Image (cartoon, rainbow, N blue to C red):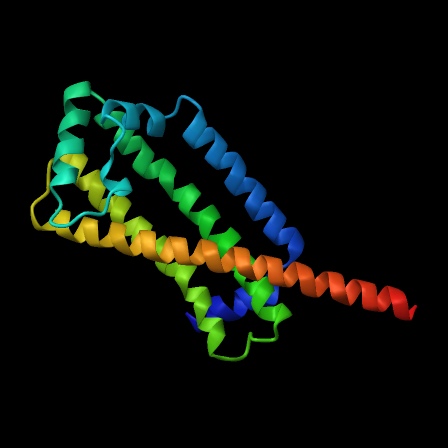
Length: 190
């Protein structure tokens, strides 16, 4: 994990952020706005899917999966569990890059603040676990105790994902301000 942190801190650049962010926005636009497995599954489930609602003890997954089965939308839902992986990866890379830019701008990359870069990684891990369990639940009908684990992964996904997005945005603003100040100082000195 420290290797992940060091790589992000050393390799993150504005160009890299723009590439990951553009990829994330393009993929999101396609996945959530077009006629895709996600939009079809969401409609079939009545606008509620387990990955959108972390609520213990977890009767929501059974209701959504049942609605998907009745609508014949399980194939779309299973396909989305696969297609959600690139979204999660792009989200991981965009937020981690933004956070690394901010940490470097504030010269906090060597201190304990660098461990904040684990938040996007935690989001990605929770998303991956959640997708695997939902695919198992929807495809094989396996629920029970796994539903609680899935709901836990969903809760961790939301917490780590929202924290990553917030910190990434703040870090990006800080990095942009530091870069602008540095640019104008150099320009004024030259």
